[in-house]
Length: 102
Image (cartoon, rainbow, N blue to C red; front, side):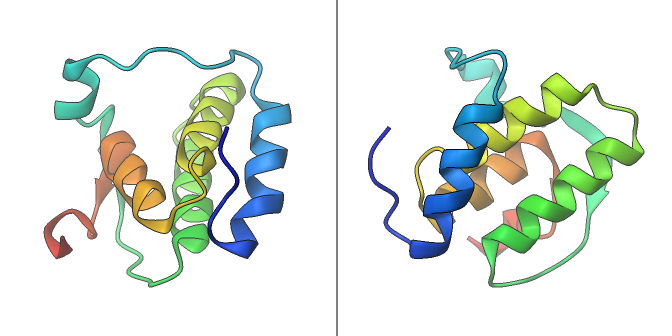
């Protein structure tokens, strides 16, 4: 894992890495093209990607998604330490308002 570029991501990325129980898994092209949980919608629009990640985690918990799966989402979203990467991962996991802002 590369060093996070944004200071507030450093702690979050390290925590997500240690909490991930599945480790890293290869992402297929299908995973990149299809929203994993299309029925979950996050409408929070914010410039802060950590707020968006927290909101997605909250909605995943409310939808009854397994703890391991939420940990996998968090590890993936924070793995790069880049705000744009975190937003893109959120858009791949749930429906967000950030998808058409890019």
